Image (cartoon, rainbow, N blue to C red; front, side, top):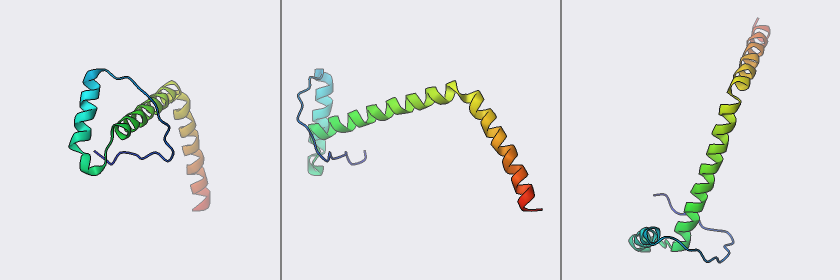
Length: 90
């Protein structure tokens, strides 16, 4: 696993997790003590991964919804590019 992100300015927070998740976090922290991994850094990385998943889903939804329009736009630009290249390289 890549090095966990370090916050520039962290704010303290109290959270409650199911015991099975807390056990996994604690096991990971114990196995990576020499690397300075903490509960907070594991939770921070998890939240960052969750946010990336939300962004990815939003992007997928956008491109799925707009696929036809984007394809038509791409085809138009391709045609313009071909004509421009013909003019430049004649």
